Image (cartoon, rainbow, N blue to C red; front, side, top):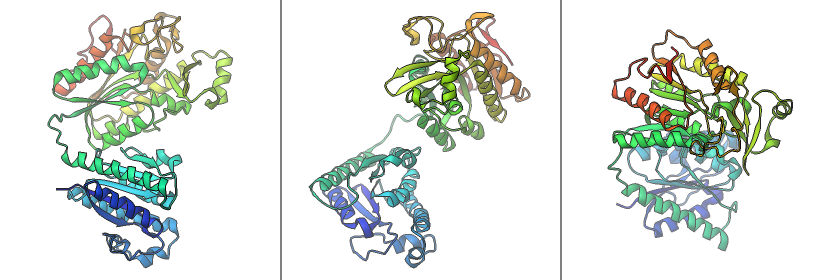
Length: 451
């Protein structure tokens, strides 16, 4: 069976370009299904398989109905109709990829359709609207290609359209032929560069168990939003939330901001979790100029815990204060009060990232000189982080101690110590194995149960 590629777009303005894509996809060995999304007039052409009138029938509308609307209102109706029609095609196995050639209006229609399709199915959005890429890609594996030209066929545009056709045809063939014989239930593992030693060791343990696959999610804003979406979709058996730094980005309005809903999906869906405040000690920004003036003023004034540090050409970090760490603890507790399954929080007292460390240690990610840029020692316990103590106090002030699903441990380790990753995995594996008991991680030495 040849793979079937859906070719979609506004045919009354981009018909000849979409027809060219269709012909190239066919040359490359796939069957096609042309779907019209026109807003101005119906194209009466026999090369269109699904006319706009066919599409609208599924939402009890006619072309005359939408042609009498504003283009914005018409686009909403066509989007709804396209989602309904294409979702039905996908579920019945009658399509294996989707490609669209669009300007602004077409992209606004097709992107939501692509977002409903499953991960792995090729979704190629050939568009001029690259400045809206984040909005169009959302939480799905959509490939957005810059079309360069808005419309028309010439020696440059034909090459671009041909390349896009090759991408979707190759993707469709790969998709239809793929059989995953090694599929296992997924465990989400959140990671940033500064928590890599911990995350990689936990993933290694997961792999060695041969029961689950670890899926590393880059906690960079987009990653967190995708994680929340996938959790709601039922993709994960458990959450290994090593890295919650997106929550500090939300607090300080940094580039890694995943929004205010981090942690919510797993809690709402009753997915077991093991948590650590990895990289909560800072937020990332493009550069110092992108930071709120108050942050730079606080650094200049010597506010305890407020520092900036150049990470790379596209990233400068700004650390949070102990008071903000208290607030983060409180925020997480407020969320976890709704937990319906086991949640174990491990708080590493000797630092939360490669930047949050008392002395150089290349194995933990900090080469020096001196302590890491996030490090603020606890005066009463200098080898411990002051933020960690404030975080615990904030958490304890807000947690509902009657919720039997949640418990917290104080851990006398750095997050990137191998022993911390081993402890983290022990908690995770015990939960998944059904052997987890509250208080079972405490050892009377460097792991203390707080409640």
